[in-house]
Length: 367
Ligand code: AGP
Image (cartoon, rainbow, N blue to C red; front, side):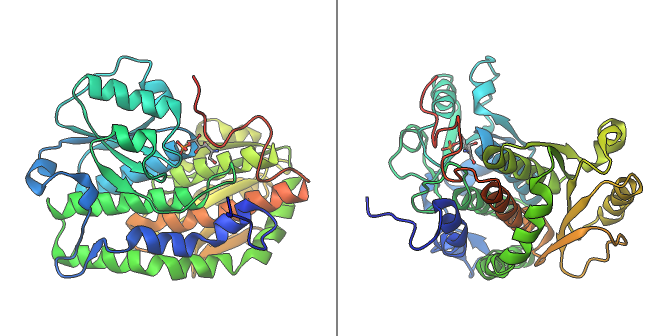
């Protein structure tokens, strides 16, 4: 194919850089300014049918599952429908109860992940209603689902997913707003979220412009044998995805925890040799998160804090990475972007094959 790295050193770098345009594409034609909602023509369901769902269950593997966790939070917050995510690789083996009033959502970049495909087939066999959030047009999962939302991230070559994941999160935000506006979300709130979605591409550009600083921070992390990534509520899927990306390409052990769980065990490991990357959004949990940062610095744990512009962390020894503020519900999207560059630069420094990490395939199409 003629899809090359376009002067970038790696596909992963190119795909990170493409994110502002990728987000423009997933939003294109879908924002309805007149009714402060979104248009998702591919869903093949009218408002009345969509209102019948009492629960949303998201299925995907690996990073798509983490995007699904963020997605479940978007949907629950925006539409006030109980939502959760589960690895498709587990769901397909555990004889799950399939409910008529649950909307199942399969999420996949390649559309060919075997575990996700089999989960969809099992759901359909049992009469479940399943839509797809899929990047690859015409792929097996897309064809198997009852309609869905194409992610339009364009081809993704690097094994470590970046732009497709970002578009998954945008796709879930669109779905959440759509479900919300046929329930209790007001036109004013709809407008607030549409504006936040529209602002994303430029905000991503701002984050990417800080690459040099992120490369410097990556240098402080690359030598550590083991790291923690912590976040709570909206920050937790971000931490999980950050740890996954770091592991995949740097081959360093990285473990994600809810910040709130540190004191229930993992804090025992914190010390000068174990850096923590903490996700600290400027939201209603800020004070609690700041308390946790103090617990870490009191034990001389090196800290990288991914936060919002203007937040006073009250700790001086931390490396601070600040991203632009979005609306709280959408914060996970932007907080994820710097973690891609941290992983990328750590892997680069360690001399690894960034685009083709050992033991991994771009899509796992076998049992
Ligand atoms: C992403 O960085 C990973 N390589 C991997 O976890 C991936 O997200 C997972 O295998 C799912 O792939 P899919 O989105 O193509 O279904």
